[in-house]
Image 1 (tube, rainbow, N blue to C red):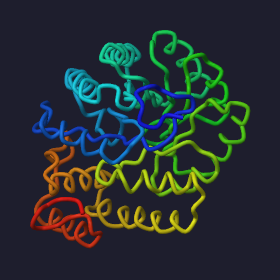
Image 2 (cartoon, rainbow, N blue to C red):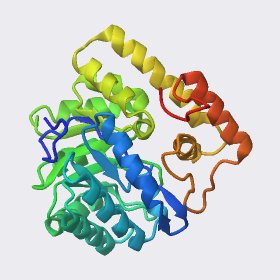
Image 3 (spheres, rainbow, N blue to C red):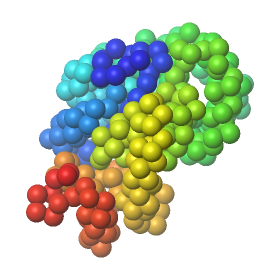
Image 4 (tube, one colour):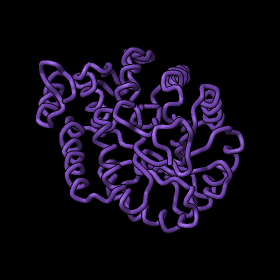
Length: 316
């Protein structure tokens, strides 16, 4: 199991935050903020980092910026934990190009959702994987996030893909526990195949059922909370699980719920991190940072959660 090591274990276990991408404008990284964010998250005891995913706004970023981001993250992390790089794209060639950059920069794994825009059938997706994986020099995790707008990977497709050399796990962001139960059952003979949960509201349940970890967006802000919940669930300390899970649900009901649009969870995370002085809250187009009324609401929620002090601006 991977616990604070740059080696990619099979299965990969623990909390692997889908890191936000700190920006100062449409095509420029907030470099100082990125450096602070990485150290903030690693100090919370996480077991890996996942960059260029949904929370990282990858689909809205130029390929030049993605390559710069990969270089900077891998250099600073310096194999303290595994770095997984999202390579999802509408273009087969660009997915392969980002994968090559990730390998050159020193990443340990890749993450791939089905190509979006044109909906593909499951046989087409499986053939796509059979064509792409031989082009990759790093292990690949599938990323199931149906309706974004992506068909997702059906359980039978995942089971078939698990037999393709180089595919080592899946991150499921469907929020469908019936789907996750199917994966657990169908992959009982593959204890080396990693099963990670996306929605953090389902982290405790996932670990208690035998899943391996969580890709929790809130771990950008409160990494120790999610690491503690993971460890409590691993230990089957149900009283502690209940307490920590309640805190996770409060984060979802407050910081993620400011605003009216699906982008609000990213806006809330970036706003909260900017309030803490970690990084800039600029978002890639077509999204925009919270204005002052929403920013004040996030500040108030953080104070109520006990994670923000108005004088110091630091986590308690």
